[in-house]
Image (cartoon, rainbow, N blue to C red; front, side, top):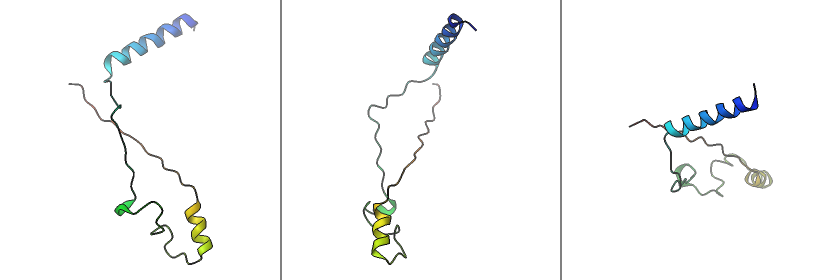
Length: 78
């Protein structure tokens, strides 16, 4: 397939998407993340339950964590 054909297809696809999909304004979007029950992030509650050794508790609390979140947007054409 030639570059001209590829460029035209991509251009038409872009135009079609821009003309027919809703535009969302996320400039005022915000998120707050809290632990269950409003527990503070540095609290050992739940995280260190049943861990008696101070060294192990410190190691658990100093560990790095990851959060993966998914945002799902549902919309309809009006």
